[in-house]
Length: 143
Image (cartoon, rainbow, N blue to C red; front, side, top):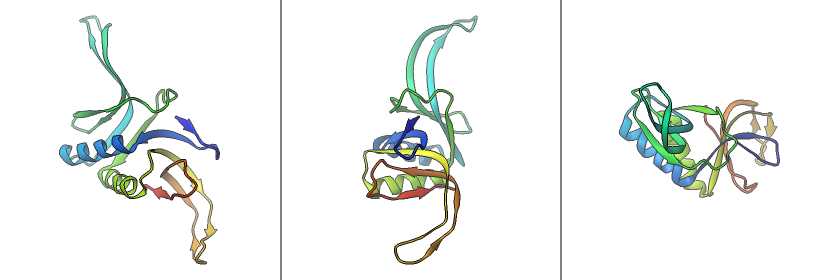
């Protein structure tokens, strides 16, 4: 997890990791993906780990296929798991490509209702969001 100046914490992915996630989502053809800290290793018959071949972020599909997304961007993600529908992965990839920031944080939060610069009333939102550390860039509602 990472914490930004607003106190939000969540899973941090680079643009390249998001791109890999989107490609895997298309290849897997599954309705959702689970992203979590992963540890893939060799285990003995008694269940003890012989060696760790990989430790980092992993995305799993419901059919148990997976992709290694690379190193964690923060070491504080113990037990953190995010489940995204295929459409959310696609939206996240499009947002990251258009927004162009190096990293994005995915978290669950509440954004209070507010009046936009163009005087539109924006309702309160509670759910998953993706955002970068930049105050010049937007926030993607993932739900």
